[in-house]
Image 1 (cartoon, one colour):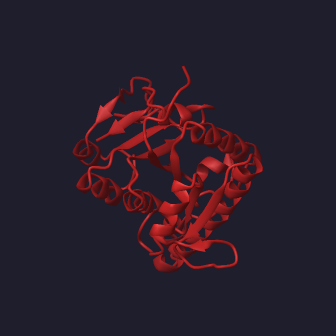
Image 2 (cartoon, rainbow, N blue to C red):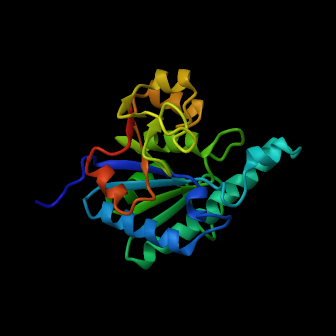
Length: 237
C-alpha cells in the first residue's frame, strides 16, 4: 500500500551547516540529495514550508563573540540564510518542485516579501515555501523563526532535521552509552539543557502546543519517513 503523509502541513527546519557537508559553503551533492528527499515527501501529499539557517556561511553569534556589534552580525546572518534559500530553491526546481522564497527583509529582485496569507495560499497550491532572513529581527535565531513561521502557517509539527538520530541524554558522538529518547516533553528539554532548539523556540512551541520532531536527515529518505509517521527520531510534545 502506498504511503500517505501523517501530517497535512509541516515546517521543516534545516541548519545551514547541513548544506556544507564537511566544510563551509554549499555542497552541490548535499543540496541535490535534500531536494530528492523533499520531492519524495511532497509526493506523499504534504504541504511543506522550509526554514534554513545560515551557519555554513556566517554565524552572527560567533561574530558578536569576537567583538562585532550583535545586531549588525545578526543581519549578516540573515543575509546568509537568503543565500541558502536561493540555493535550495534552485535545487528543488531542477527536479520539478514548485517553490517560492519569502524573506522577512525585503529584497524584491530575488524573493517575495513574507506575507502570511500569501504563504498559506502558496502551500495550498502545492508549492514549497522557503522562508529566508529569519524573523527579520536581530537577537532571534532561525530556530525561533521556524517556531514562529510554523505557527503562522498553522503547521501541525516542526521537523528539525539534524545529523543525529534524535535527542539523547548526552552527546552520542562522545558517549557510547548515550540514551535516545523516543518521546520527551518541553520542560525536560529546557531543564536538561538538551540542544534541540534554543530556549525561546522551545518555549514558543510549548506555549502553543506545537510538537517538534527531531530526526537524522543525512539518511536518504528520512524526510518522507518522518512525514509518513514512521517511528524515527524523537518527538517533543
